[in-house]
Image (spheres, rainbow over the protein chains, first blue to last red):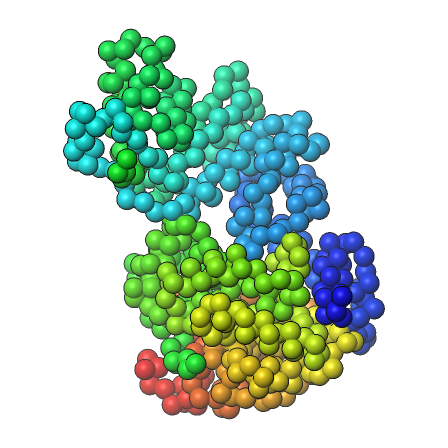
Length: 259
Length: 279
């Protein structure tokens, strides 16, 4: 290994607190001690990544409080050192970390809040695509409808929680006390950008959530109708789906498709 | 590569997007952080596309890790190349440092040792990166808090040698020079005078925090009077160079930043014989 490669590896090891061989390569000039000079870099490393998590997960931070947030950041840095070139993605594994590591895994709402906050980020910078209009939809002939595949906007994120994660997130954002963390029935949510590019989240019922999930799987309109067969009389299925489609068009959840 | 004098610019920050579109402030140009646009779309691209219709834009990266001894990250370079094609910037810069080794990214701008080995290494990497991107890059001097025993030359001799070897040009961060000069007790003008003036493509001005025994380059304060003095003295050596205020934290209002920018313009307008609007 070259001197330069060795030096750089020692620098990275120092930042991660693995060893301190780098100190032997540093000039000591009396103005600051060697340990102070190295500490400037160690602190900057931790503070920068802490700030990235804090920015992306502001309400989770408030929910946890300073002490637990610091513990989470410290352990996350060790378990998931960044291999991303952009800090935007550094905390992508945070929901997984919170779901699988004590003491956080005893409180599933924490992973749920962090997952919701990641979905907000995804919706924020998802790809632009032209939105589907009613006029375009009306151009499809009766014969084309069974094989028509509606396509969700890339910003549309689906999630369901057995906790009041979203309600708690909203309460904290409004500087209110969060509600009881858990509920008896599953909550179904959609996060997406609206036509004005504002990120929105909407509570939906299970039948709508199921249909949206099928759209993510790129099924056609006939298959959507088939999926409803056990939930309602067959003559009501088309009307139910058309009603949903109209809502989604208004919300900017569908994009133009040639399929 | 020639870099046009664009005048006086600001770092483009998300909290100012809306106001820039609405008010169209009298800023000559904007610098974007390249990696902030390595996303598919949404608000970042929506606002950038509107802003770049009215203002020249340059790109400034923080993650190229040009000095790393690890393999070149071609996924990163491809993302950069694609972003350059979408933004069509006046020029593209990054830092003379290393950030990533192997899979580990420090997200910091770590200083190189000033050795012949590092010089050869950087020259080779710059060549390969520029070849891949199909354009020349500009590189910024970083601030530092330590000096390596292995260094065989000063930072300024290192930069001058790199310029002679590769022809690469520099984004001279005057605040970084001041920070390093204080932290390592050298004369900042000695540094600046050693770099060929034709190698200077852009200037950064920024704030720092002074802890007495050392200074940290924080970009969260106004530009200090010492850095203004250094900039004014340095400008006397230069033809007009595109100059900007780089502020990342504790962001004030756009008006506050524009007032600082106007101070920069007023300081050097007589030196560079600029008109009121620097055009």
